[in-house]
Length: 127
Image (cartoon, rainbow, N blue to C red):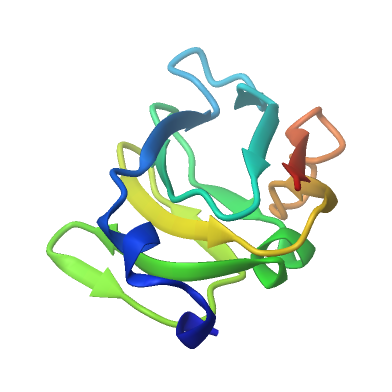
């Protein structure tokens, strides 16, 4: 897929968006719980977990609709198809990607009870 992307996109500074998985009060929610991206733009999704428990950032259909340049966490850089990220308490990760396919995608934390408690969201990719 990377072959379809011009080098110009990779020279473009990514738009940074920060999403908190839970919060220090232990509430089960994504902040914000609505994300909007545009096809062909480069993004750096900064994920943080300020809560006392681990959380997942899961949206397989969204992950299938983007080209992931890399995920960075700690001193590790991961490349290739990513469908879910687990963030332990206090963890941070950066997901750099370019949306390729428009649509509306469901975001959720797959830990038992978390989605049911409200840890869900929507991701929209516009053309």
